[in-house]
Image (cartoon, rainbow, N blue to C red; front, side, top):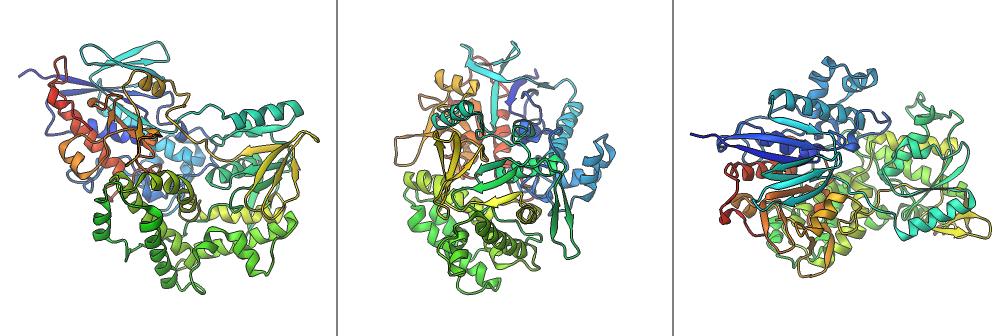
Length: 606
């Protein structure tokens, strides 16, 4: 019998791409023939996870919550895990590797519920890639280049053009894409031009990196627009990253010892309060209202489910139960949790402090209470609510993937206010970061401006000015950092590959249930029980509505067709990303004879 070789390219080698590669090269009883695998990424392992990056930047997943290997909980995968999870690697493999001393120290100290540096997780991904290549000699090739074009040849092969001038011709391509690069918006261009005219500093939305932040001068007052995870990254890079140190007092509180190189950071955002801390000792969450039966009922809603009308009240009911079980003080008030400044001021009998000093004291009290809740054993009521909402968000994610919500819910609720609320309450940083923020407030390095921040360009004095709900009088500064990631849109991205896919008609923007309006994401065949069964999940939908088994997509550009998908794959829970990786590998198993003359029935429809 003649053995065939299926040539496959995986574009993107972050956690998703590596997970797919591992499933493609697993010993699979259904496969006929061999696989030749090409992994394409300008930064093998993914730019977000470069092992060389600043060690002060932390993961937002716990040590035990990250892997790239599928295990027996993933449908279609037999037996145990094919390789070590991140925490297992840190304990058993990392000590044997020639890693930098700081990473060796981190690996040795990492607990199940601890948060490692992104650099250490990057070292894990690089090790997995190296092991993948070594374990399959001659079958895996890593291309440290960017894919800039993709076309289908008359024979049906997929030709990928790389930015190093080379091209690959393969039978199938898997696009495992992460954050898309975005051009500056009109508002960002205007702010940058204003800064250039007046000798100011303006940094547009981007992943926090030390290089651009060097423009911030010691002692300079800098407005940070945004108070999410990017805020914490920027803060770490210009404090510890510039030689400052956090020292623990006898009572466990942190004290910041400045290096003298720090700017003064003014936090300004819609809420005015940085994201809330994760629990030091998380506990299991058992849902009582949004149970499996209700989830199944709602999953069949076929675009008729309203988040605000049908789902949000149930989520609030679950959070109320969590608050009560954790002996929370008084009646649970979701509005007070969502708007901490207003709640804190009301509790003090104040309408609005008129100084940053007063607001900083209020913010310190808010963060202190949050830290106390997150460090309590058992966890405090506020943290229990956050952990419950984190589990509820997984259920909402499943409903989005099933196409249960109406278009308004996906666009305005899940893509708007609930995304913000869910991230603030249930997707915050390690407790360490909140305690550091308190120490920085004490040291005067961090200051509060309040909620509903508005940035203006003051030509009369040649400075940026910020107003907030609590401080209506302008606060003028010479530097602004947009401490957030840009809003991504596959229709306008500067990524050449995504642009080429749309121009060639190989991809189209997804529309939402009950709406013909295009969204910012690319359309794929949804991952549902039915598409997993018939083997069509994750296929990229072309402009004419067809979905070829030769082109598959998973990752961030699928949003909002999927929701809340930035989390790393987790072991032991039938993880959705790992399930998609297995489905993709199973589909490609069927393509052993994917050559000119591919049978029409394999060209499934969405």
